[in-house]
Length: 414
Image: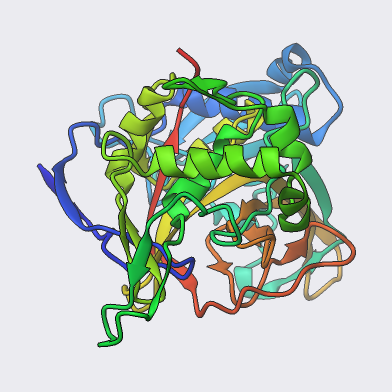
């Protein structure tokens, strides 16, 4: 089956992703089994409460698969479940887990026992699950969201911090070994400039800076990553010519024909690249190619929780601008929600809402870097949560990335 991936777009970071039609032989099924849902719930419970994995496992009881209408799924049915309800905390509470990777892992959690005695009855809305037989309709609820708690991921001991240090520019000597390109829109041959590194090469270089990667030798060229990471900003890199030359050489090597095969030109300037060349470039530098796939929040969180940054690309609203960048951290937001009877004011239920913020390094000298609410990647508006108390300026590249999200995961040392 052919997958036409729209990676042809001029990037805000002065890079262009080429369009290609390729055979997608590894298209993933988004279905989540009951066992995988159970394991995910155990992990989430361990993050909510300071408990060990084995203790969290004891909190999870029976599982009931549910249809998309919210009814218990019979064993004779061939329909795949839409979600699962698990009894937790000695049957005093419940958790609703998604059966699809296209939805958040945890849909709802709270107190109460759904009534399965009537197999034809619809279960309450998972987002407003209440103790049965209260006789209160949805319209009679008042929801009160309390102060949320933010948990940085990964939050487990012994896991390498996935965050990367570099805040480099695609110009300013980092491109010193790249060719001179002429402005194709001008008739004046003097209208020329040094080519930009391109966002694809920049994203790979930033990933290489992480301790889980750091190739030290490629075709006789060596890299001192301690020194390179010490020169993490544009001023520091300019001040250390040894680190500068090593990073500039890495950018040249990444663009070679056997690697990203970058097409240098000037229309901003722009540099052409393709996501499809990234996996074999990882291989050439001594790593596994990873898994190139459509964006999945769960896949990103799995990598972050293991201590690995994630290569990601997307296109904007107009489908004429694409960009490659790095997700290198995450934050889970846990919001307690109380459900009150509008009539009596009585508390009838409590549950938690979960949302995630992804930490993004855009590759623009730190501009617009920070935590973005998952699914809302507008670099012009800036992050929802800044990385520092004194945030840098916004990128203002007219880029609101909304479509064709792709990621590369599971890149490991051979």
